[in-house]
Length: 153
Image (cartoon, rainbow, N blue to C red; front, side, top):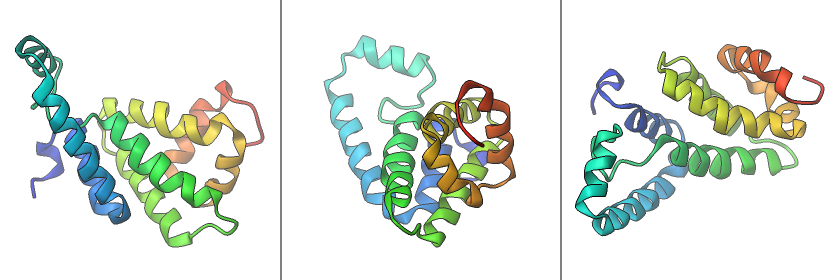
């Protein structure tokens, strides 16, 4: 496996999710297969445009799609819907978020704000259930963004 520093943001997010959330691997594989099927249908001009926009390969999954499908819908929703949260899963979700926010990658940090923080704070109940597992990066992110949301933090 490459070191994380050698990966573009999309592949970095994929590798973090693959490593930390093994239950999401089948969804990552499904998303990659869907992306490859879409890539076959793309005209050559669109393929060049995608590469110009920063995708190393038209088959790369975008980090926003990965975070939404694997972390938010695949892990956090299941975790927070349970009567008693699975502490081990909560800690792994927290570790993913901390790795993403602590990566020093502005695009990844922005994606976390848009996809993950918004999910947790958009309706305050998810945050209230998850905050005991939140690490320092997520707590700082919530502190900086809470002005845009309602609720007890």
